[in-house]
Amino acid sequence: MTTSAARSQAATGPAPPPWLQAVLCDTDPEGHLAVFERPVPVSVARMFVATALREWEVPEAICDTQLVVSELVTNAIRHGGGALSLALVVRGGHVACAVSDPGGDPPAAVDADCFAEYGRGLHLVQALSLCWGWYPTTGGGKRVWAVLR
Image (cartoon, rainbow, N blue to C red; front, side, top):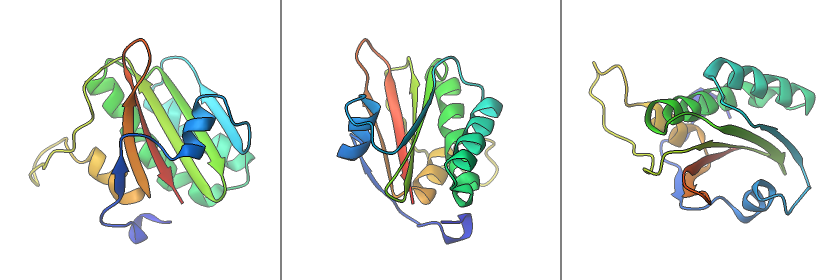
């Protein structure tokens, strides 16, 4: 999907699809999985996405996935106390990403006015994703995930 063909609304949910949950919990090794497990700056996240998707031979997904990951990592840094890890999964024609942070507050899409500097990130995630959501992680914190075609 390209940015110009983005859906106006995406289904959201409290948990990722079962196949993604299984991959993120290390119970399903199918598909491609790459995990960056240390504090994640936005620029490194974008390079990580491009490198992994080129290696997995899905370069057409790079731009949209980079945008979604950039927004999730930025939100983790601004509102969640920092991005602790980034997981990227390709399986069955879908690309999924998940960003963990130590914050417990759920992500909240706000209606930003046209002059606001911030407030559009989750709207972009929603528009580019088939579905997205978040769930609390053991020991505190949360994981925000998104699935793209």
